[in-house]
Image (cartoon, rainbow, N blue to C red; front, top):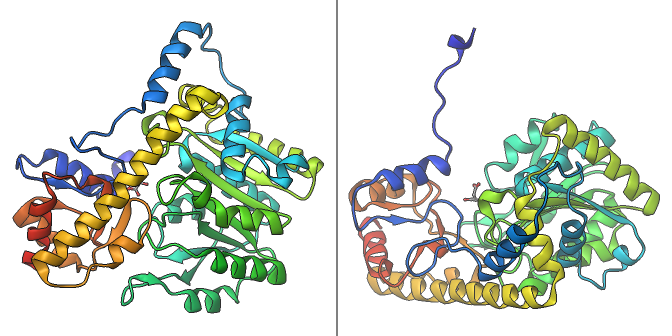
Length: 395
Ligand code: LMR
């Protein structure tokens, strides 16, 4: 029976990343997958992670399973990081969370729980959104609707279009929002716009579902969570999918959590039991290593300080790269690329056609997604001029 299955095309992100790895051109530039790369083009291990890892190796006495809900210290630390240690919802005990295999696991468990609670719920996703949102959520059985988000002409958020589309979201629907550093476009909502979304959620009764995978890589840990915290402060129910892949550099350790902000403590515990059963059904127990490291870092003052300093430097470097890239592109093309400096996090759409992106790959070994999404953190001093000159050559 297996011979009936066809060979599938490569993943739109992973496939291009693999193609770049296989390219022998020494001048190749990899702007495909969203991982942070330093000046040497290496995705580094945080010093705080190395310290936590050394301590863990010394002290770990068992590799027995974690519970389906994962490590308690990690869950507590991540709740505080995302919601803020002064969160009223946390103080009221109306928050629960489950450790998951990365942000994808968090999205999946959230989708499973939402589907159990409201089988007819529609999930509204931004147009565009991270391509993996679509199969991750729809494979649970929930229909997806799109709301306008990115305006290619202004390179910013089409907020009027977003509001107009979300007027059709009804009570019992779910609206998936990017907490910060929108993937793929880098254009974020202002705090005032988050307030409008909170008003609409209150009036229409839809529930926000926030994917926050880049906290700390836009403006800072607190600033990047401001919109999310505003919604949590105003609404009875919010679900958050959080990831430690980028801000702790734990990509391959698959470290994330689904955080449920519920109406009351009893409901938070009921939802957690549902999430644990969903996890048992899908993968049983989460992987331990990354969460044991993150739990230590997020709850230990000294380690936490080492980590926050490293993350702030990373964030600052990305923002510097944005301004360097803008300068180099404008110099080589004579066109306006000021939007790159206004966006947040790792991603930006350069505004090229799929054909231009393909030419860049074929003629210059410059790899970006077909949509012209680039990972700004793949730029460095040694590839900047080549990249900008290459982009200008296809414009
Ligand atoms: C990306 O968008 O490139 C990252 O989130 C990595 C991935 O899994 O797609």
